[in-house]
Length: 508
Image (cartoon, rainbow, N blue to C red; front, side, top):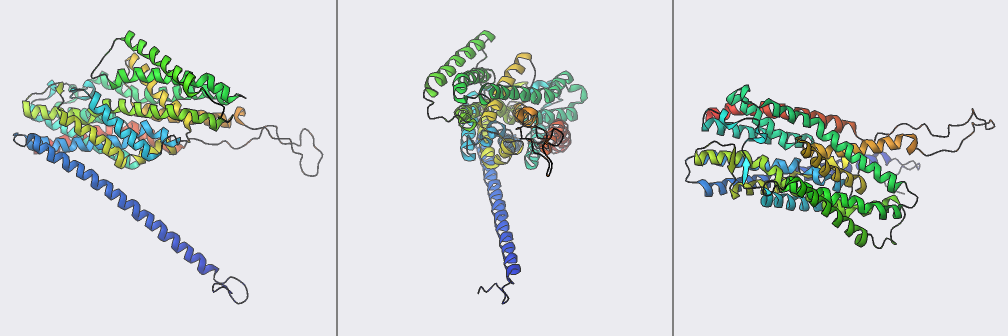
């Protein structure tokens, strides 16, 4: 007889065993929590080491400069901002690929880190705009020290806001964060009249334009794939016909996207040249997939899952290209104000554009990659897994939407956020899927069932189409939380920057 059984056969030890199981479960949960805390502290330790390394390198670069202390502080803040960009903004490029299982978390981190750094170092440019989007003129500042204080306050405010957004799990635009920081610091330093409000109006319009346009385009491509491939009886034949077209569109769109955004600091071709690049890239992408990748499809099962796996390789390429373009663009958010401070201190000039020293660019490039590796998985999981369920097809549509939306917006002269576009694309495919599943088009017919004890009749059967409870395939709490974070990004970073300017200026 078991020691945990009573003499009368009733398991008297059941309560004790249950209690032991609960205790073991609590211990296991405590161990996991302790491990997570330890890993979090380890990540923070590595981040601190990077910041200290930046300080040491800054000392080597400017140890004899009169304004060494200011440059050192600005470099540390720039490194902090770069890590926050990596932790939050980069997730939008690789999140869908991770959520669809096309990439593992580690694979996504490595690919994104490498291509982000490559984009920043290769195409980050040697000249950057000191004040993002030109919302405040450098001539508005009374003297060099006021300008330095304003840039430092703007950079620190943007970094703090992006850090807070990452902690609460909200993917936000780092560009909008630095815009808010410059706005708040500019108003505090030079007054309301120093701000170019029409430019601010176009930036505010992008809050709506970016996610809506990205969501509509992503949903449109997903609907096309469903109608032309997934809903066909012979899915493999349909895939052979249309996947080369879709990959060709992706190749052409990303080629134009990379030239327009990723290489804009080193090459600005004419519109006709961009068009020719897009057509040539479409033809190459179509030919590679049509005549090489899909040459032998005899091993592919005629199922949605098998056909969906054909989108994995193009999706991985899209994630890498998005990361490259993002690195070349958003590195300026971290190092633009830093370069302005370095130039103002060393050369004594305040200019709208400044030369970007290689060591300053390296701080931004390395900082973005380190921030991604250490703190990026949280936002990656939210974008790729928490908002809605993604598979390679849906994730491919999101990535394709990101490139096309930027091209359309740039052609119209509209400022858009890559973060808002990517997240809007995720919501777009999620809501389309939810609509299809809950509509009559997505329901499965059920056979009429007579009521118990009665002969079947027309008024005693369940309706041909089941009136099932509508399913929610997009988590509303993430939708509301992210929208709220987007709306307050510019005001929040502006208020923080204004307050920080008063503090920094008093000390400097």
